[in-house]
Image 1 (cartoon, helix red, strand yellow):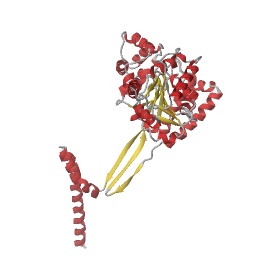
Image 2 (cartoon, helix red, strand yellow):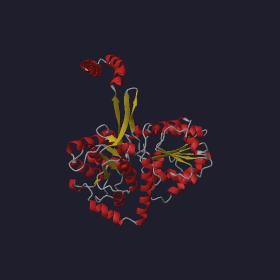
Image 3 (cartoon, one colour):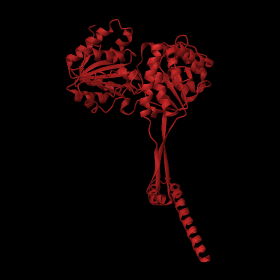
Image 4 (tube, one colour):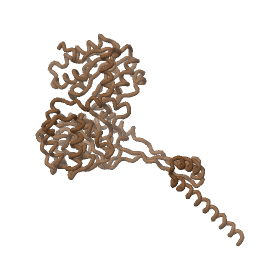
Length: 473
C-alpha cells in the first residue's frame, strides 16, 4: 500500500504536524460531528434526516425521559435492529447461571485470575475517613460513603467484552455499592453475549439489562418502568454513549467520558518496531474512530513501524476497521528528543500512553496528563486491558487533563464533618460576621451571634446558680 494518508509520518514542529497535534489534543470536540458511515445510515433510518451525533443524543435522551420503556424499545429497534420488549429487558437469573455453567474452563480460569487482581488493586485505592479532630475549639473530619445504586455500561452488541464487566463492576463492589446493575447491548437475536453474562455471574452481578447506546444511558439516568434510576453511570462506550453521559451529567453522576479508544506510543531507537506496531494495531482494531499515534525522535524507526503495520494488516480479521482507524486517526510524529515527546504526550493527554524507551520511569515523571502509563517493553497496553488490576475504563479525547480512570472513588462521595465548642464558635464569630456582611447575608451572621449570646446567657445562669448555692450554704 503506497497511500500517503495511511499512518503518515510528520515532523511535530512542521505546520502539518502541529495542526494534526492540535486536532488530536481537542479530539472530543472534533468527534462530536464525525461518525462512521454505518452510524450515519442508522441515524437516517431512525430520524428521517441527517443529524450530528450531539443532536441525535439530545433527542434520544429527551424521548426516553418522557416515554420510558416505549422509547427505549423504539430506539433499540431503529438503531440496533433489535426489538426487545420491556418485559424482556432484564436478563433472567437462570440465563446468567446457564452462561456460567456453559462457559469454557479456560475462560473461567482467566476471568477468576483477572478478577482477583482487579479486586486486590482496587481495594488499595479505597480512601480513609478522616476522624473528627479537635483543634482550637473545632472538630473537623470527613467520611467516605458509597452511592446506593450504580449502573455499569458494558459495550457489546456484535462483540464480546467480558473484561469490561470485571473492570467496571468490581470497583463498584469494592466501594460498597449496594445495587450494581449492568447494561449490555443485545446481539442481532436480542440475546446478551453469553461470555459477558458468565463474567457477570462469576462476580455476583445478578441484575443485567439488554439495552445499549444513548437510550441505555438515558434510561439509567432517569429511570423507566423496567429500568431503575441510578446514582452513578460508569463504563466505556462509543461516541453516542460518551455524548449521552455528558448530556445527563448533573441529573446523575458519571465516572468519566470514555469514548473511542486511544493509544500513544513513545519509542526511541531501542524499541522493537514490530512490538510498537502490534500495540498501535491493538487499539486500531477496536473501532474505526480509535486513534493510534507513534511519537519518536527516530524517523527510521517510524518508517519501520509503518512497514510492520502494513504487514500485520495483511489477513487481519478486522482489517477494514483497523485500516480506517489508522488512516483517519493514526500517524507518527517525529520529535527532536524524548523531552519533546513527553510534552507532546501531555498535550494530547491520551487514554493509554506506552513508553518504549530505556528509562520509562524517568520519562513518565515528565508527562502530566494520561489515563494510564505503561512502563517499558514488558508492559503492553493489553496487560492493562485484561489482567493487571487498574481499571481499563479511562478518560479519552484529551479529558485525561482533568479526569481519572475508574476506581472505587468513582462510586463514592465525601461528606465533611464539622463540629465546634462554644469557645471555638466565639473565636470565629468576627470572621463570620465580616464575611456575611460583605456578602449582604445578615442572617448568616445572626445565626452565629444567637449561639454566642445563648452561650453567654448559659454561662451567666450557671454562675448565678453557683453564687446562690454558695450564699444558701
